[in-house]
Length: 476
Ligand SMILES: NC(=O)c1ccc[n+]([C@@H]2O[C@H](COP(=O)([O-])OP(=O)(O)OC[C@H]3O[C@@H](n4cnc5c(N)ncnc54)[C@H](OP(=O)(O)O)[C@@H]3O)[C@@H](O)[C@H]2O)c1
Image (cartoon, rainbow, N blue to C red; front, top):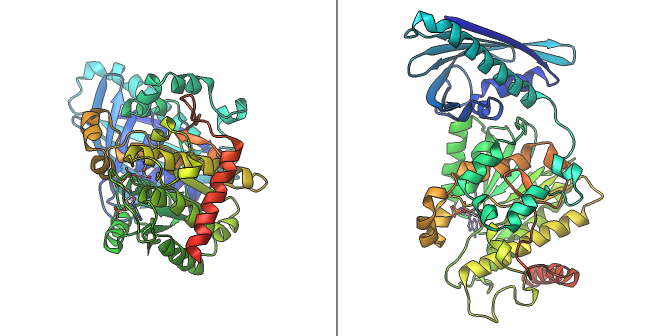
């Protein structure tokens, strides 16, 4: 038996510390040796909860399963871990110490197959791993403040390295792949902020990125409202989320977000029962290979990806304004880099319809809208951000661009990897300290890479006017 013991003190409440530590899905945020951690049992975290971990130390990879054996909130949790050739018991005790919470972490390793002569080598190695993990836990639980470093250091908010990489196109595009995500992750600060007491409205949670984001958000304990067009699918998603995380504070509102009348109806419904919204995530979106027209006579790409987001956000503003620090998060796409906005032809009527181009126009519009809203709310504690998830293996991508999906499948991110930035933008402290930025992998990026895509001030104003006119026209 080899035992390692470390103590740290952090400035977070004992309840938060207990919750973050005992939900072992967070361990991937703070232990650099853990590549991923997934809760594989149903229900809220408690005795019997099980977590499957993938670990990597240098060239060694291994898998482990941890099960909670004792659970005494907010003071003590004991987890039993088993790997291929060893077992470990982690006993974590928390105590209040003035404004600090002290965490004493003891890991007792049982290595039955270890030859005795290796003990002097293994013991210091395990100690080092334990110390690194505890340093990570301390960093993860230390309260963060201020905006992201690049925002504090550079007037554009964008790190020059990212600007150069984006401009070189090939490294920029490789950043969209799963490798880009892995590289970016090595520079992240852990995010263990909870959303307890906050209300998050999320669109498009029944599939792909939205579903992965919903899972990550649900375990951070907010009240979650899912807006979806398919009631059955949405109810099933909500049940799955409750089963996986124990969060029972999840409700469903039904609307087709390409139909403005449905958006107005669902907004009325939400506003009636929800005086305050802290985070609105406009994730629902789609690329249509063929031109389609909605029942209201709108081109569907524009209606779903731009006008619908504009309308829903405007309608939910009264509730967002009641939050102390509201956030609006818009899911755009790297595809928008290829196009400029066409304010006089938002529904692509003057040219033959092309799905990816129409999609890029709409997402370009959404990024401009994000900047305009950030400007409008600059004197209030509003954070308005756009993000793009990279290339993500989702049902949406497979259906809309099947050949592209097949060709680059080995490079695609998982939905959880694509959704990570969305979850971080909703929960972490840093993105609440800045506004109007465009993010990939928790870093702000420029919004123009190719020449000729930059819009004029006049076009930005015209975009806002055009969207407002559309909204007013359809309301009458
Ligand atoms: N996957 C990528 O590589 C990628 C890259 C860049 C940007 N994005 C963006 O990421 C977001 C999510 O896409 P995804 O890849 O996860 O696609 P997905 O798997 O098709 O999921 C899209 C979600 O949006 C919902 N939705 C679509 N149209 C809707 C409408 N009219 N009304 C209500 N809900 C609607 C879908 O509902 P149903 O379940 O009912 O279909 C689904 O929940 C989109 O905005 C997309 O443009 C994706």
